[in-house]
Amino acid sequence: MASVSNKPSLVERGNLRFLIIDCPTDSNLEAYIKEMKSNNVCDLVRATPSNYSKERVMGEGVRVHDLHFTDGEPPPEAIINGWLKICATAFGGGGKNTDKKAVAVHCVAGLGRAPVLVAITLIEDGMEPLDAVSLIRSKRRGAINAKQLNYLQNSYVRSKKGGCIVV
Image (cartoon, rainbow, N blue to C red):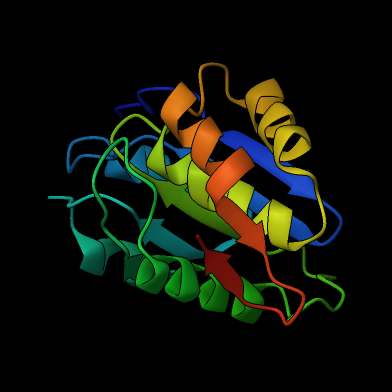
């Protein structure tokens, strides 16, 4: 059986649990499904176009969402809103995550788009941007490039009304 290309990274804070992975292929998809099952993944977000079988993942009871955006760029507001809605559903809108559900997210290498989405949720949950990036980097070395860090630190503004404001 094929294995995952790079070790998945579990990022946790309170009731939030994220599994950051690189992009599976049809040849190693079973290994990724095994990782998702062992981490109680309920949703998989694909931040990049993917060629592996979406139906195979859904057959395991995992909801699959396509939220593609350009590599190295900040996510558009529609992508952020879709992402935050998935997280709110998965984690009970700020309630207890007693089932220890996780949301898996990937881009190509799991170093840019996927960690940025996770950082946005951590910021929405009250973390300072640099603390969110540090937490992610402690689990996923090389995550979030300088341009993405600048966006999270200087352009993404946490909303007090539960949504996001992009300036």
